[in-house]
Image 1 (cartoon, rainbow, N blue to C red):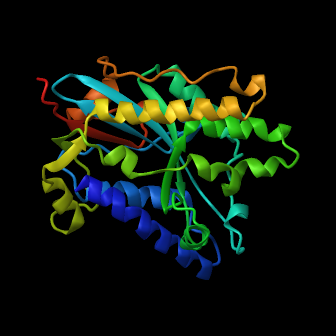
Image 2 (cartoon, one colour):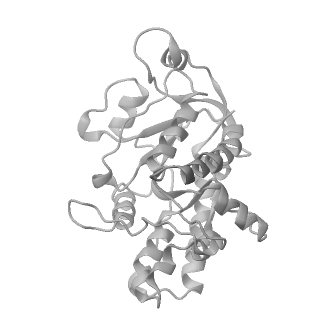
Length: 304
């Protein structure tokens, strides 16, 4: 179910974003993120955990935590979402318009906050960007023989931060957020949610979308066991490959030393589960000071 969702949802995003061409304002990435989490909720077990992030503190729109209940190991991904914009016939000129966004509180680049946050929480955490692309962008790219641009793509968060910080060194700084430059590093959502080493598991935690009995909220609270949840080990393998490709590119591209001086740390599994995550898994309140949009995927490996 989860893998099927990962393959179907990006196409729906393409179509959904195409509709904002008829609106007075663009659909924001937060809307797509809500739909993404809602889609996961729709295939969830009763203990799916959703809370809301403090973007200023984490630089992330959400975090995904993959936890192996047998091995007692986890890997955490901090995710920042951006959408692409563009109306011209050249998809290469379409771009992540808000990529250079700075926090309101201290005027720090959001990508820097995301990378620093992941490092602060140790090697069991890794940053990724989710990129949402409208149908026009995807169709133009496919017509040009480019197959990896989809409604939902993911990209290494450290590498994205490299591009943001390298922008001032480019003749045209805004090229750093163009799809022409970024699309080479896009991966499909299925990289995370469709793995060979899949185990029966649950997507954790209760969330009611409507009060009282009846309606969608009641259905979601009942939940069901979700098949084929990726284990932390499987997800880690993908992150290691994403990291390797990012470092290889940074070296070939000869990014300034000031940009690549801090090599992304090698991610690894951890058995030291944060207390707020344990609280979420157990159904206890995480507390407002720990609040972030959290999705916990619980698997059970065969090694127990």
